[in-house]
Length: 100
Image (cartoon, rainbow, N blue to C red; front, side, top):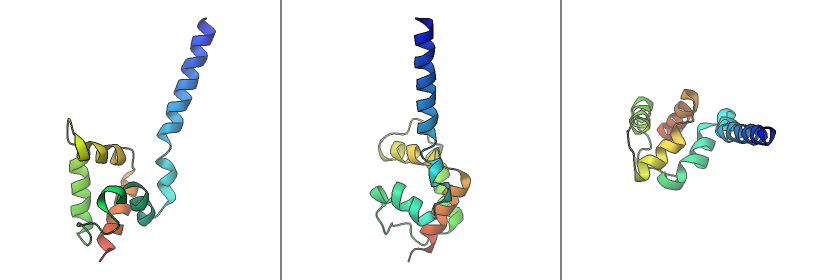
């Protein structure tokens, strides 16, 4: 029985590791690809924040990531932002900045 339990634990750990790599697969994508895949469902292809400075966009993303007890849209955005690397968030912000 202990061997079976250990096997289950290993399978669960492997599944969690694979689930955690889903966003990492986006690392080579452009800001446009990341935005389209992760953000445009809520923010539309032409978001209200288009053209804003990259630093302001990054600050906004950081604020959302750091909200404690987030609910609703903020909680959904946290789920998208938390696993992204700083390079990925900057890529998204740079893309949004370039929209006209």
